[in-house]
Every structure is written in C-alpha cells, then in structure tokens.
Length: 475
Picture 1 (tube, rainbow, N blue to C red):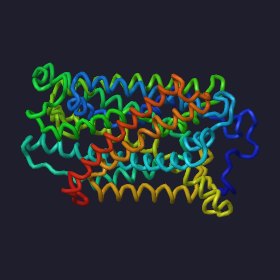
Picture 2 (cartoon, rainbow, N blue to C red):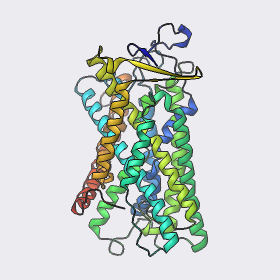
Picture 3 (tube, one colour):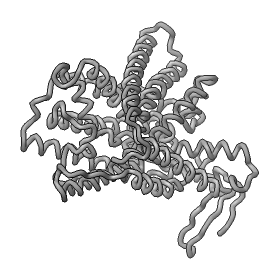
Picture 4 (tube, helix red, strand yellow):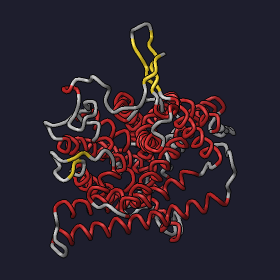
C-alpha cells in the first residue's frame, strides 16, 4: 500500500493533452452518460404513483399539468445549461456546481439561499430514496406471503432490516470517488427504471384488456360527494400538483451532470441541452403511459404506488422483479444526489484543514500489478457516517416521504424556476418591463403558486401521519 501526499485535481506528470482547460483531468462524459444520469435522477419510483395523481386531477387537467410542467422544466433547464460557463456559455470559466453558477451570475445572499435550498433538497431526496427502496424490498416479502397464504392473509414485513441492507449497499457505493465515475451505475439504474415502468404499463394494459377500463374514471378526477369530501379533494389536488411538478425536476444536479461532459467541441451546453431534451421526451412518454393507463385500469381507486400498494398480486414473480428493479434503480439515484453533497463536504474540510493527513492523504492499493484502488480515510469515514445517519433517520421516521414532499415543494420553485430565470435575465440583460421580462415573471409566479399549493398539501399529509406516528413502524 502506497501513500500519496495531498489530494490534487491533477497528478504531477500528467500529459497536457490529458487535461481540460481548467487543469483538471480530461472529462469523458457523453450524450449517453448525461442522459443516463438525468433519467436516473428523474424517473424515480414516483412514476408508479402518477396514476393516483391523474385520478385526483382527471383526464383533462391531469394530462395538461403533466405536459406543461415537462415543458417548463425543459425550458428552464436550457437556461441553466448556459450557466455552466460564465460570462460566455461556450468559452467562459466553468461553474462546477449550482452554487458556483449562482455566485458567478447573481452573487451575495442569493448564493447562500441557493446553496441551503439545494443541500436540504439533496438530503431529503436521499432519505426519500432510502424509505422507498426499503418499501419495495419489503413488498417482495409481503407479496410472496400473499401468494402462499392468500390475499386476505395477515402479511406484515418490517422495513427496518431492508433499510439496513440498503444502507450497507450505499456505504459500498459511496466509495465511488466522484460524480464522474458514476456513469456505469447510472446506466444500470436507468435500465432498471425502464424495466419497472414498462412492467407497470404492461400490468395496466393486461388489467384493462381482461376486465375492461374502470367505470370510475372522470374528466375532472375523483368526484366530490361520491368518492371524497370537498376538503379532501382540495388537499389531494394540491398533493397531485406537487407530485407531477416534482416528478420531472432534476435541475438540482444538472450542472454537476454537465461538469462530467468532455470539453468542446461540441460545447458542453449544446450536449447538455440535447441530453435534457432526449431525457425529457423519454420520461414524459413513460409518465403519460404509467399515469393514464394506471388511471384507466383503477379509476378513482388508483393506488399510491402500483407495485407496493398492491394494485396487482399476479403474476407475483413479475411484480417481485419490478420491485427489485425499483430498489436497484434507487441505489443509483441515491448516489446521483449524494455525490454533490460528498464533494462539498470534502472540499470544505480540505480547505479548512489542508495539512491534516487524515483528510488530505490518498492511499493506493495495488492488486498483483493488475489494477489499483485509491482511497482516503476521511472519505471512507465521512461518507459512511452520512449513510448511517440517514438510515437511522429513515428507520425512526417511517412517514418521512411526507416530509420529503414538503421539502420538494419548497425547493421546486427556487431551484427549477427562480434561479435559472434570474441568471438568464442577468446574462441576457433582459430589460425590466419588456415583453420577455413580463413573461418570465408570470412563469415565476405560476410556479411559485404551485409550490405553495403543494407545500400546503404536503403539510396536511405530514400532520395526518404525525397523528399515528410510531417509530420503527412496520410495513
């Protein structure tokens, strides 16, 4: 085992043609890897709850909201892609993350607000993925119990053991050094998302073909006075708006993904816009299929999750496989949202204690001269501690998905709309009160109202969960 003093962006003696214009080791990301990262970040198991969201809003408003928010997120993502370099989007200085871009364009207090919002959002997503993955793994155990003992059997499975398993796997995956090395995991995760989404679509089609479409579908969604009360309708519409709006949001990690792309030509912003367009089209098609077909199959009784909510029991082996795919996909999704946090934590500590060998020294292990692995004791310790703490929180607060929804609703507007729009206005020097400026402010206001409505709905769901709160609750 060999020790290397200091963590450097570039090893001494690295040929110049193996470096980018910022002196860092040459980036190797492509359109494919960027698209895989985006799909991994965007298509979460939430795709399987879109039928519930469509059921609350109805055929007309549900489909309209899904399409319009996909377009809004694509639109603002283009703004953000041009902020990777400043002041020129092709030849300017690189901004390695969201905070750096906001600092370069807007500066001051807005940088601190952006960083705080982004970090809370990233942590919240990691917690949500841990809870969701454990639910999917526990669903496999419960489904096998139902298959063996009948659908009326008392089948209970604790998610705690699956959270421990998930945490152990994440400790290992967290030793992937940085975002640039995630491309393989992201491709596997993206494939898994296509698998379980396709299975959800296939099961809905099979149910419609075998039993016919549900008679309880409606142009305006669940009906007041028949299915639910007016108050329940309001809360559900708020939650459904939030679910759909957040389902396509990935801007919190867009610049981190763009920073993996190999340098021009072609320019990174052009490649990122192509990757964003491709990924948005793919995810929107899957969202429409899962949401609309699920609603057609179940009507107003659409479950919150078509796989873990036991909308289907058979064929049990296929549903088991789909739930395993969900868990594997969330292994990758966790890392896509955790790696930016790891990078910030390690960068801050290395600047604060640059001479501390525990933080700065890299160690290399060679295996019979065939391959080598570099590690850092601080990286191992800090990342392991992060995963352990998050796993414990997920075990203590089994309703954390409600809190994640609240965090997502608060973070959606600033990260997806406000900061990209403000940076675009600054970069393009859009005149106040011009037609374009007015349109952008209207967009800002609409998305702010959606965030507020979703936050209200999520808060109500959180309050309901707290009434029946039990630590280490079983599933």
